[in-house]
Image 1 (cartoon, helix red, strand yellow):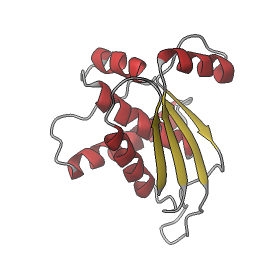
Image 2 (image 1 turned 90 degrees about the horizontal axis):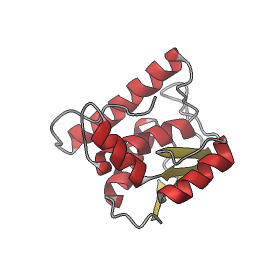
Image 3 (image 1 turned 120 degrees about the vertical axis):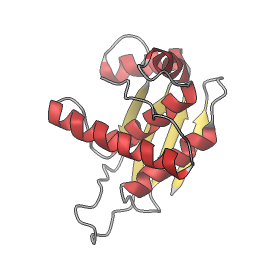
Image 4 (image 1 turned 30 degrees about the vertical axis):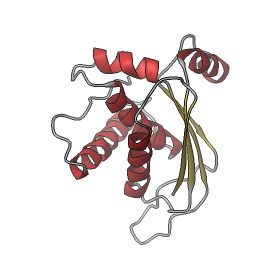
Length: 165
């Protein structure tokens, strides 16, 4: 899996954890191992500009996903996964830090960025949370991926609760 993490935010983040959880999520979703993903970390001002430009919404947001080849997980276990460019995930640590502090399970900025990375991966793979059934499916899968990744690393305690509504 070719994953690039480019931190342009000026904020010190755990880039290795972002890379690791993205790789784990893609493997768990059975995405071809030669597929490519880019993760860009930006400051609040840059995220606000993207949010306005692409969503016509004010203020910075936590994560945005920009799919390229619209790859999807294989329908059956024996199907060969397609290879291609997944696209870009853009993260904002300033928003992530605030959300982590405001969350019911209060957690760190890096834990929130890990959750948001998985969230962004799922959006690139076609998942959404506009409808209640879509939200239940996406957030359930998101929690399973984050919990699995944390368990593999021996990280104890509750995983971050979704802060995205």
